[in-house]
Length: 278
Image 1: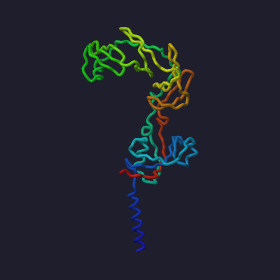
Image 2 (image 1 turned 90 degrees about the horizontal axis):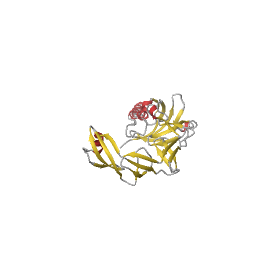
Image 3 (image 1 turned 45 degrees about the horizontal axis):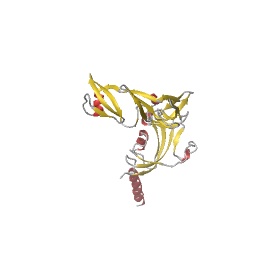
Image 4 (image 1 turned 135 degrees about the vertical axis):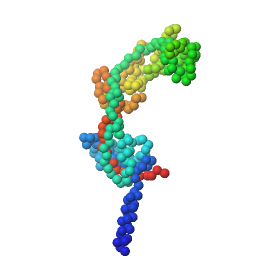
C-alpha cells in the first residue's frame, strides 16, 4: 500500500511536470537576463548578481514583457518560446536575429559649420514628368489647369512629350516651408522668372536637420549653422538615433547603426514568471 501511494505521488508529479506551463506568443513573462559579446564581456544585464559588471545601471529587477509585441529582438523572443517557469538557458543569437547587420550607408560625415545666404532665389517655371504629377494629383492633367501644394499655387503651362511644365503663381501663405530648409521663409520680391525668399531663422535658435541639431547664428546676409554635437555624444534625428564616433576640426562622423549592429550576442535567460494570455 505504501509503495502504491508513493507510485501515485511520483506519477502525479511526473504528469504535473509534463503539463508545466511554457512560454507561448501572447504570454506576459518576467525574465532575468545577462547579455555578452563574443569576447565574453557583459554589455547588459538586469541580474543583481551582475551589478558589478554593469555599473551604469541603477535598477536590477526582472524584465516584464508580452511575447509577440515586437519589443524584443527576434532571437531573444524566439528563445523564450517553450521555456518553463524557473528554467534557465544560454542562447547565442546571430546578428541577423539581433540588431541586424552593420550598414555602412548609415555612417555619415557632416560639417561642423554650414553657411547659407539669407535669401534664396527660385525659378517660377519648372519641369517634371507628367506621369509623376498625375500620380500626385490622382487625376489627368492638362494645360491651364490650376492646383495647389501645401505651400504654393501652380498653373500647368504645357504638357509635351511626357513632361509637364509648371508655373509658380504665388505662395499660399505669408510664410512657407521651402524644400531642403529647416525653417520658414518669406517672399520678398518677384519677377516673371523668379521669386526671392528670405529665410526666417531665429538667431541662437536650435535647428533640427537631417544631420542632427545645429545652432543658428543669423545676420543680415547669412545664416551660419554650428553643430551642437560633440565626439562620443549620442543623439536623435529624423533618420533615427545615433552617436558621434569621431571628429576633426571641420567634420564629425555620425553612425546611425545600433551600437550592437553586426554582432552575435549570447544571452543567459531565466524565466521567473509566466502569465498566460486570456
